[in-house]
Figure 1: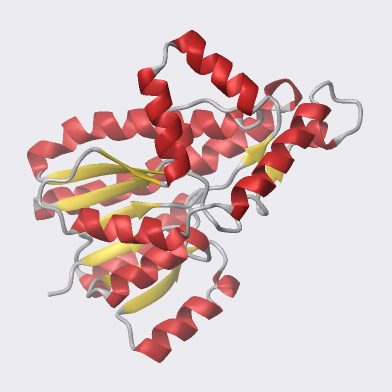
Figure 2 (figure 1 turned 90 degrees about the vertical axis):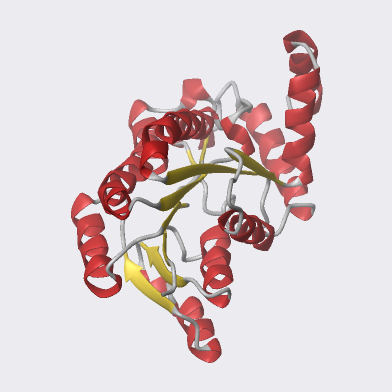
Length: 276
């Protein structure tokens, strides 16, 4: 019997590549996305390669949508062995310029979206006495960055939630893994939401925002392929005793290594010189 993997946010990027990677390696893959109009490329590849892949509509902000999708998976596949929480987006803007509604919306998708679907899947895995939950965090789940404080906060929250969940679910044979990509070559930055106030002329943070956007463009030139994240996820699933965290990308590896080895003052100076 093929293991059943449910993945969120599969219309592009990490979710798209992970869905294909798992299906190509013998996992019965349920690739979900909010907008099924974006599923054409994934479906075409799946049909051409005759992959064990099914696409379902699922909006992580809509409990009814989640329940409908999970119910369909349970009825058809009878189980869920793997949950990969990948859906999310970036909010660019310096904190003073961000509205609380913009920040709440960021948390609704990036954090509460993870909670919404995980809460529905846990009882299934617990009854099976097995399962793996993989939460796609970010290097920004361990290091703060200017201009994306809301996004960073959601990833810090995902990390703390994941760590706590590890202890709670381990007695039931359920593993919880955190994946921390660096800058990935996807449409993520193009699809980022820019706060309304930050986009206006006259913000005291306009020069810093301009530099941030230039830095993002430069980082994209040397970004890691989303396929590398998919490979890492496959490797994790094939490991009997996986670690809590996996880093993907030399950029984030260097930053996290620096944070570990430098004092807080030294690390702040390095970040201010290189980023601000």
